[in-house]
Image (cartoon, rainbow, N blue to C red; front, side, top):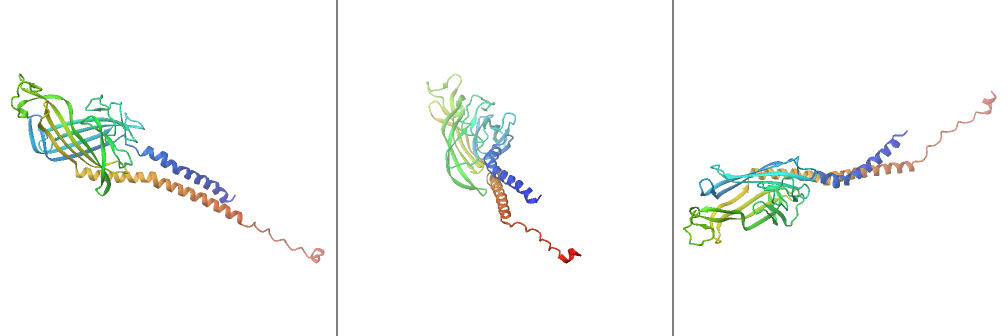
Length: 338
């Protein structure tokens, strides 16, 4: 049996398999691999200089402070599955010099691993409150970010708010999209009572809203406003850089802002920014490999095998048949008689 007759069917089968594999890698394999990791563990540090905050222990306002915010995200693999991821986020905010704790925030997010859309159930909560309905997108951004407005959930106001595309920048050598989310002054949390001395407020007149003459305190609302800026790698959805500007005041019931209890301008640390840029580049190469390189290589090799088999078969059909062996000359009559 000729080798060509054996290799021909095998080459045809291999070529057909590779041609079939090309779209499967792009349309089936890539979407299953290019999703949010279920087992993520990530620590992010933001820093603010010349900040203002109220020290809860001493009930005094400190100015010119250095603030550190450390966020840790850990994936809950057991609670998630192939389509849904569950991440627990914990943020500690404190004075970098004294170690005084300013705030603690927690969030448990349940979201689609491909589209990044937030959902409910599986213990989803903000600061332990499972009644909060989270919507929009959270810490994870989808792959293939576009120049449009995204709705991102805000843990301060407990609502999703638009994050508007604001331009194209370069961070650590990467081309990134800049998105901005602005929150107008909004009352957050429940009203609280504070002593007049904290607000440096003279004894109010009779009938002042929220004033309790016997206790010597007054009811106030906590009012928050802020701007979050995110620099996102459009290829991977990685937040390469981040800035959070926020201001929180105590407002009495007469509508007057009496005391600034937090004025922060938090920015991602240089080390975290470089690390995120590096990881974004690595993820982008994986995306390119699965969506472009492997499908094209598979399709190209499969087509080449089929063309090679076709050309070989065509050449075989054109080759003339082998000539029959030459006939032996008949023996002379003289030799027969002898």
